[in-house]
Length: 223
Ligand SMILES: Nc1nc2c(ncn2[C@@H]2O[C@H](COP(=O)(O)OP(=O)(O)OP(=O)(O)O)[C@@H](O)[C@H]2O)c(=O)[nH]1
Ligand SMILES: [Mg+2]
Image (tube, rainbow, N blue to C red):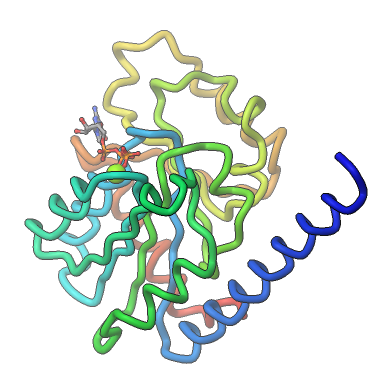
């Protein structure tokens, strides 16, 4: 890569970070906690959001990121959750969201009565972690079917998150997974990273998850 290329890349990232800071401050000013969910495809993000809605009852909105479909939005909408779909497919098919997408979405969303804005990032454990999208908290979801080594192989998502949800723990009895080793690998990447074991199927860990969300709103969101 020639030096000129490096300069251009830096400019793009700086622009994204600036927009992200503006998004974060604007939402904080409205008293809205913004929570970004990142993971590999199929870790259980949408299912968890459906469960979350049944616990929170109201005040929740989801910006749904997908490359092509509106399938997740349809699931959320049929559960009575307000949703705004971002599809990157027609614009090059990026496998992550960027802050400018969120800023544009927020210009079109009626945020009255919203306390919690969830962003379901595009299913991918690599790219979403590279872009600040203006959330107050970044959550990495890792399902137990993915293996102990994933935090070591895809460290950035774990380094940049404030909470790791270890999902689908109802499946542990059927898997050859060493949960302690998985947790040690997470700690090796980010010793401060909080972890909650969850299952949307048997409703394990959901109270701790809801407490975490509530604390995001009570503690003034980071600007
Ligand atoms: N056993 C088990 N299955 C789950 C759990 N949560 C979700 N699933 C299943 O896992 C599959 C994927 O769930 P989704 O919620 O669509 O996952 P996602 O992370 O939103 O997927 P993408 O948006 O495509 O990245 C579905 O078949 C769910 O029913 C869980 O806690 N336990
Ligand atoms: Mg989903």
